[in-house]
Length: 236
View 1 (spheres, rainbow, N blue to C red):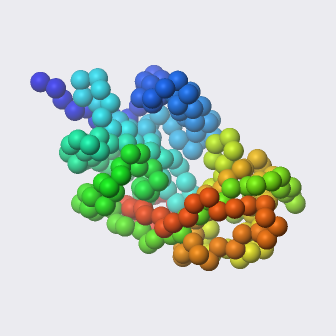
View 2: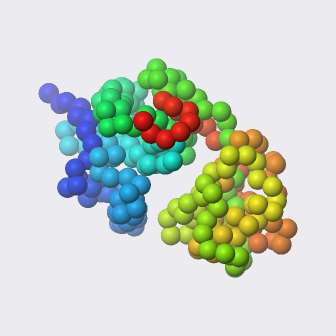
């Protein structure tokens, strides 16, 4: 009789995790991403969880350390199958283990849901049953750089980080004014960012891009996320 097994990864499992990706290019990118996360201390094998049955991987969840707590970088479920049961088993095993390790705040954003499609709304209802609450909506805008931008000084704006080889993310506590946004985008561009995922409380219509035509909006919308534990501060 087959049995669903839920566990975090050992160092030896990382290669197997990467082989879940389709195609050599995506597998290589996954390995490189994990190496970078581990090298920076943003994650570790113990923050990668999966559910397996008869050797087949049914679900994967990758957690990344952020200033406020852990944020899901990936939540992959069998969306076309019995994903609710798999999710429940995953959460029942994973959440107490993370709490025992002192992780007092967890956040799952819709951007971490690979292939969820229309199941996002149903997922929210399931997460509520496990102590999550829907976070206040936040604007999400993704500007892409159109030409070379020279940074005025080294460093990154507060709340910003590089994401991969050519991108960056910048979470802001309030809607940015035009000057602060131009300076921050310049700093990120100076570190090689060709695109930036911006996020702040409010609506995306309030964004004022630099008027020199160096950036254009590639995508915008409202971010949905679910939070469990403390709303503010670091991990417990």
